[in-house]
Length: 259
Image (cartoon, rainbow, N blue to C red; front, side, top):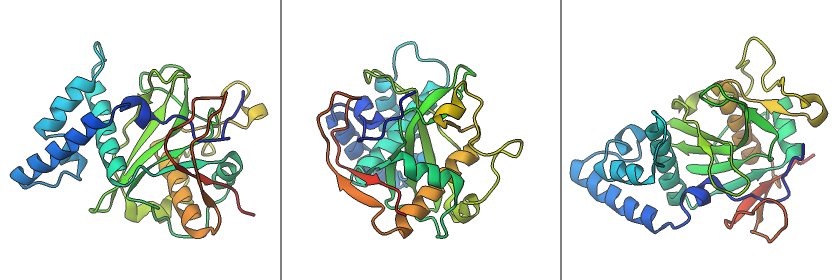
């Protein structure tokens, strides 16, 4: 299996919102409605109760979507709005760097490099079971939002199709960012080693599995700690033309292993 980390691939944000005008209109509507209701729309529980958001999610939802899809769409819209507000921070974590983070916890406090962002992982390196107990799907990356209230909201993205036709969003329960230091070295799975995989060929390709929400939080916390404490780990990069997977059109930060 080919692992790809040569450049940032087309992101779920770009797939879901190819024309950002609708998202920009939603952001204006959210501000107006939240102001009139005197509520904090930066909290997902409040954000998803807004009529403007509900209307937008209904239009975005694919016909025939299964029960529970509204939660996935709502979580995606929340992450997208915060992603735009934060300046569309996209990080590509290279294979050598992510393998080091799987094996070793950085000796630093995890602090998000931005209030929201998308961490793209090497293609086909991490796998996660589908919510419907179907075949495992490749994890493309992790959206995150660090709220003013101290909560971390994470949305893993799996099953990105080669032609950019779709993907799966798997909302996790919010987690207190104050606990992130504990996540660095916690045993999240208990019954077996974190990130260990039973996929066919996992030994040959060094594949990882994410079976628990804790493993997602652990990897994200280690990324936060690494990027914030390692000079030279992150370098600005720009979109590029290629014959490989469709590249992202967004500027991004390449996160490499620093010896």
